[in-house]
Length: 97
Image (spheres, rainbow, N blue to C red):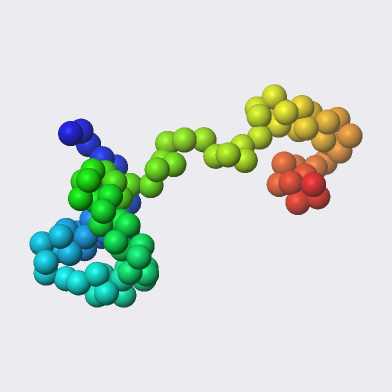
């Protein structure tokens, strides 16, 4: 298995789920610790047992956002704004739009 990039929050979840897997903590204790429901903890624990630490990593990491504007459309809109409103910056244009 290769390297897995994780945030501090995800690392904390892995450590706590490992303690549940070893029997040192209960699902209810972990639910309170992680501010989750017992059902969510059971779901995470099931994935953790099947895949390992990589299961806790956010699945959308490294993917472009779903609401991303196409580069050509963005450039066209900025060109229209610069043509009509030379004194507008991109921040002001975003506020007005």
